[in-house]
Image (cartoon, rainbow, N blue to C red; front, top):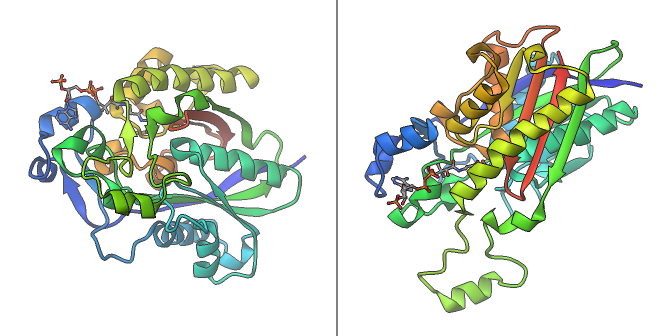
Length: 335
Ligand code: UT7
């Protein structure tokens, strides 16, 4: 059977840097609070009126990944696009990438698994490659959070965390023994769907009703997060799902050359690192610069880690994510 190799990674973040000090002026928060609780120093926010939609940012990251892979867009057989912030309610942004890349009518699949979207997308792409159906799959994670955040003091518990950006990888059929994606593990627990969610508008409370009600206290169209609750589940599930991957492949935490956790909160990454006995060199974090970019966080980090020479041929890479759904997942990849 074939396996799946990462042959190129790319990322794109909007130029506009928003520091914690900038947020101090919008909402009742402080640089000290944000750094202490999340590790975030600054994030990128798309300015209103910019052309950088999630699909456009995704296409920019994709072009970089395709170039790094030494391919052209015409070599791509299948697009998988993970996001919680699509350009439109429908259709999903995958088809826009197909159009923006100017490629033939290849299939485009949209993945709706929030912070776990990239790991879910990787697992889906891996199945298509393993069976021999597709050779080159473009996997994108892209988010535009900032224009939909509550930037008043009411939203401070959520809005200071999130940033915009996109990351992408090209996944390719591999015939080398022991190389590529070794295992992926996916989970969900819909019982906690509303603990981290954006509930309105939805199919039973549609735009016409929201406009008619014009209720200034209706916050259903802003993301809601039960922060403490999510935090507690995140630290448990991250560890569980990484151990599940290690157990399946008969490996130890010490075998991991680089763990790239979804960049939810630096405190979560540090807690997992400490519990698993990993060194600073074994864990990659860049949330300090970009905040939490949901489905884009792992591919942005992966692209930066690869560019910075932190991922070498033969390395064991571990990806892990947890987020809204709840959903969580992990992957082990021999580069
Ligand atoms: O990516 C998907 C998964 N997401 C996560 O894994 C995120 C998980 N959760 C978290 O990262 C943390 O829960 C947060 C960073 C969101 C919040 O940190 P926390 O330590 O859980 O803070 P808290 O919600 O318990 O709030 C503590 C205090 C409260 O004040 P009182 O009640 O103690 O007086 C909040 O009102 O901090 C206050 N607070 C703020 N203060 C300044 C909440 N947000 C802010 C803020 N600036 N932005």
